[in-house]
Amino acid sequence: MGDEQPGLAISTNDEAEAPAKRMRLDLDSNEAPMSAADSVDMIVEEVKPDLLTQEHVFDNLRLRRIVRENHNSTVAQIALMYYRPGDQGLGGHGMGGMQPYERSFDKRGAAIRDATDNSNLLVTIGHTQASVFDNENCGDHLDIMSHFQLGADATTSLRTCCWIRSSDDAIFAVAGDDCNVHIISLAWTREIRILKGHGGAIVDLQPHPTDSRLLLSVSKDQTMRIWSVASGECLCVYSHEATAARFHPKGAFFVTGTASGDVRRWPIPDLSTEPLEAHRVVVSDSSLIVAGKRTSGSAIDCLRFAKGNLLVKNSSGRIEYWDLDLDKLIRAFGIRNHGFLVSRFDVSYDDEYMCAGNSRGEVYIYGIESGKTVARLAHKRSVKPVTCCLFSRDCRSVIYAGEGGFVWRYDYVDDETLAEWEKPNESASDESSIE
Image (cartoon, rainbow, N blue to C red; front, side, top):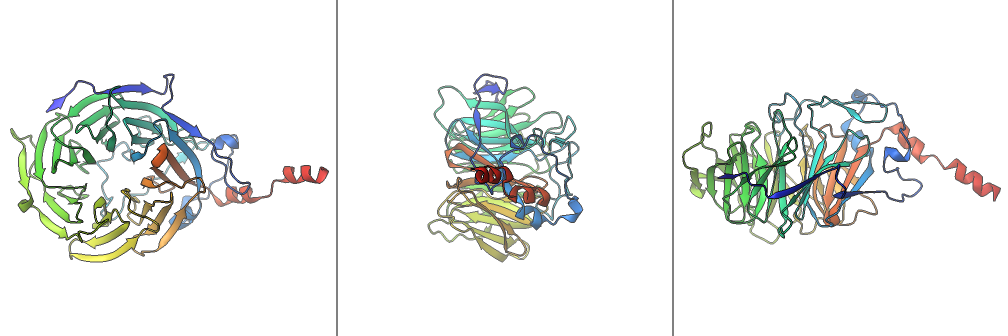
């Protein structure tokens, strides 16, 4: 049942105490500057997008921003608001790719967008806090917009988050060890609903890809639940242990992974009208897609779809790419230096690439069909395990986070600018010759 009594304290970027710190690094002379502020509104003529290959874009990714959250704890998950005005869900993503996402920029490098376009928003969660950042409007900056925190006496941590499509608001959900799902509105800058019913920590949240009313939660109480975001009612309860979930891109069913490595397919009853009592679904109503190996490190921690096929990742760093129609393993990927780590990966919105982090603070980009490593993102300051990573919708940025409260963003830099950065510092050489 929905409960509208607030459970979160809320602050915005106008308040005195900033919830996150932007950090500058002292880079080597041959490394890229961290932000446009270091070069004061540098104007660069961009190469036309149709002349660029995506792999060239990945090759030109450079570390541009670092943010450290003030909780100094592990960032459990990050999520970008991908929905734009007129989007009817994320049609195409997971079934062959979405339409190209073109952006226009002003002379400062800031994205030009409609006032109702919230696709610049990034939410992060860690400890008892959720932070919302402006990921584009300030050029190379990654600036805090709003900050939400569980009650002052809260000691439990948040574990998962997601955005919920809305035509007139920016809404996201967070959940974790307190067993509740918190629905938060940025327009109202407050918590608008609490979804109660789980008896254990919630480890995954998934929005329905085509019906914005529906939200799926996965809990350690050995149930999954589908909720009505609007009413706060639980519409369906699935009785089975799971560690991760993902809706099929068309929304007709969802899949779950377990601690033993099993992957199961679950039906969704007709939820066009809310039932008087929640539907009950048991394991015999599901079907086994992948049988787990039941070995150490076989726990499934992330599931994604690409081109209608399923990508399954376990905590030992193995990602399997399955054709569900043929019940066939297409290929498997092994993430280098992954170790035993719960780490969410991401699929690009053209369904061609995926990115995944490891225990050494590195992120690898792979071609899904080719199976090849396309790029490696690494920096000498990034040495802690990566718990989550994702692509921007236009695939010109990769953002990742992990232990210590750090959020890292790599952005595409054009060839001309890179050439300028690689030139020797003439003023420094002049000074040394005078000496």
